[in-house]
Image (cartoon, rainbow, N blue to C red):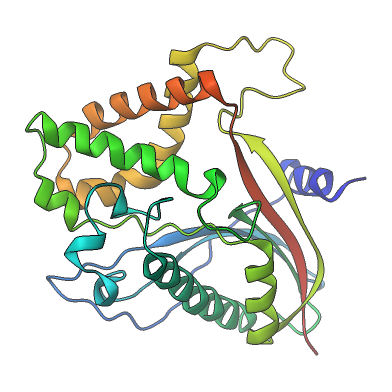
Amino acid sequence: MTFQGMISILFSSRCHFSATSLEKKRETSMDSPVSYQEYLVLSITSSSQARDCISFIPLAAYTGFLRCQKVYQITRGTYTCMAKASPPNVFKAYLEQFQKDFSLFLRLRSEEIIQGGRVVFTFISRSTDDPRSNDCCLISELLAKSLLDLAAKGLVLEADIDTFNLPFYHPYEGEVREIIEMEGSFDINKLETFAINWDANDDINNNNFVFDKDQCGRNVANIIRAAAEPMLVSHFGDDITDDLFKRYAEYVGEHLCVEKTKHIHIVFTMTKKE
């Protein structure tokens, strides 16, 4: 059985799931809102009453995500996210923040797990060590492009776009491995990556799938909307979201007509050190 197949069974098995949370100090200010990135975690512990639990843990509890590195010249337009044209200091800032957040997450998570307990992690990553790769930047670039279209129509202020950052970082597997080893709470048992089409309905096992540009665009847009909408509404208000994701779906559909692009996911198991 493949590692990916094992994960599928774990998620589809009949288990009792409960949400857990971690308490940690958060520094906030009115002019520097906290941004969060979420990771899906499946925890497996060995005990007489073993249970599986899925936790959506908010990370990057940090005063003003990347505000200290933010300068006007590098945040216009598609620089609201990591983009292929971003200067090196943008990639460096995102990587350093991810290193801090993931290290903190590992340390706090280790406090909830008994020695010898095992955990399974999975989240979106990228296929190469180059942060400018399509599977890292493109899906956010299209969202930034959609925001600029709304600005051109007068539906949103460019100044608001310039002060907005998407707090998403898709790490390379080598970066993940290095952080785990440096933090020191866990031993890695196995680490793999696998690819999924942007539109998950476009699957090799789905014999009924027929490519439709508009529908595929909407499918992808709905997934991204579920993750990004709270941040967008907090910054821009809720009046623009329908128009924004309609335009975004159009861009995604146009792209998928030219190139079938995939999300890269990293999945790994670890054991808490004795």
